[in-house]
Image (cartoon, rainbow, N blue to C red; front, side, top):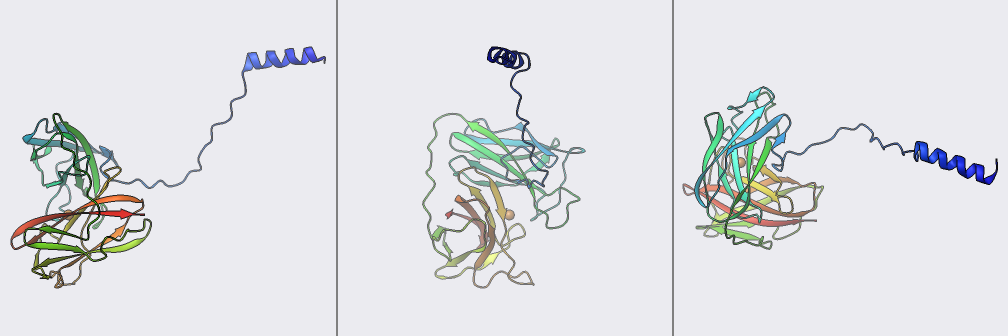
Length: 273
Ligand SMILES: [Cu+2]
């Protein structure tokens, strides 16, 4: 073949068939671990569909219909005294609320008061019937926006202690950064007048900790590791949480406990390297 003939043949070949497409890479089949963190409205066969969301500042209503594989679901396992726990958070990690919705017209409904504008997310946490005891809850989330002026609140720097009323909550390891990918016990001590506080059960636990990733607002809700077989309150006022964070980044944690007949809430910022 002459050079011209070769080029002509190559041209015709390229013109009629186009360049051969590289085969698309096919990933090897492997199990995928999904994470239920409230950043999606659907997970594991369940979906949250908003019927009502707050639209303006002041008292409002949030109502979410949860649909499962067999249709709308109005009953879940009672976990910590409630079938569903609902949380609200603004995207600057402020305005945290822990609500307990009830079923109204087939949807999980709670009154909620939002006091400032901005982009919010409502999280719904539940354990469907049929899951083994102690199973991880499913957390679904739906965003909503309150129009108007917004006073953004910067995420506070890490602090070793926080106060609510007469109570001081001390993080026992100070402001130490946590290490992602490791297991550790995150310990807080509740004090009143410098002495361990008498903690009272609240929703079936001595504390409730909602941990949000600052970067994504993904939620993981934690309860303290039981310290006594009898279920007594920790005499030293120490609440220890099993912390195992896969990702590095800042966390904003909201800790609720009950003492002196009142529910108290404090918040901590913790860095994870
Ligand atoms: Cu809880």
